[in-house]
Image (cartoon, helix red, strand yellow):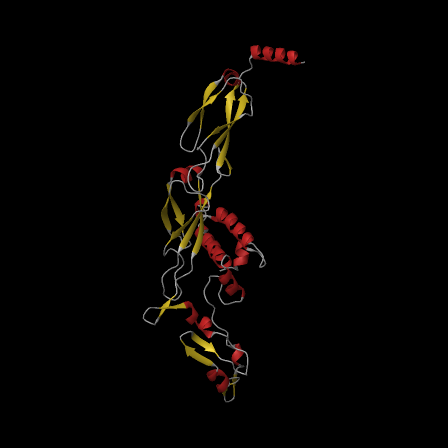
Length: 313
């Protein structure tokens, strides 16, 4: 497993915003759905999610930076070099019975080192050997802590967010799960998939997976907050004489009444035809009129244009 900073392509001084931006950019690029021909797509995506899981969590990031966990989020084996040198003629050298065995106490809070005048060693060996990662049960014993959680991003279309849909998400282990996107779901909505995170390294329950919804780029509509914008071509004759024009929306086409003598660039508002709003309702659809000329040159129209220009001069 590579260094999480290397996986996300960021420096060790990166702040939370930089981590989030790097993850979202790479998640779109490396998602298995976008790399169906790459046999290693699942592994790359899993590596990305693991790196993000560690660096996006302040506690885990600190543990990784201090060398307490590895790049997979697993606890590292403790270093014993602080207890002295190698084996001497009469056995192991560097151990002092008073220092080692009298400096630790065991109690409800786990194993802790007392105030030895010899100095050095671990401040809390429970965290090193795993006691600190266990939870006390109602019966007084300890239960293994659950596995690490997973953060995932799922892009949905404007239509799917508005009307609802069923989507498949790929977990770090390659497993795919179908989830339901409720009608009216907004970007940033976070869904919990219980028990679908990383397995516990200590035999406890698996962690959870959290799926954050984002909006995919649309081929027709441009987002403007909760409103949407689109351009609609209108023939010159319809703009001059007036007409009804079919306009696409998230829930199907509607007829827009274009009044006579409508100029190019004029914008009409279709209320409630935009994206879901916080607290309920929807934004608006803003339709900008583009005037188009006939496919073939019309001499009568050309002559009329000359008269207009002459009159204007």
